[in-house]
Image (cartoon, rainbow, N blue to C red; front, side, top):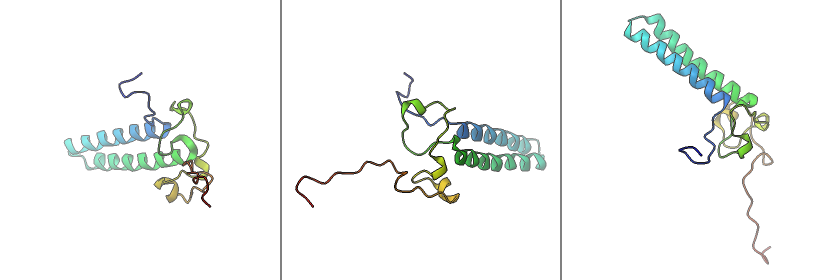
Length: 118
């Protein structure tokens, strides 16, 4: 058990890749500011934009995760999400890509009517 308990923290290939690229871009931009090099500042900014585009692309390819908890067997960051092709419910990235989750893709529980009600 970790300090966070037995929960899915959402570690995915898309998340790790995006974080690494954004961290590198921030470091390059920071060095550009400290060294007074405009080209390094712009290179760092370009790396941050590349990080966002790469993360989104990997998410759409199934290497991200939908919102909410996942089953324990899908917690490893190397597990690919097979439902990404149809879009995740309430996911801005999927909606921007034109992937609208259908009613069959939603996993929200349905409430059953009380006995005797139509």
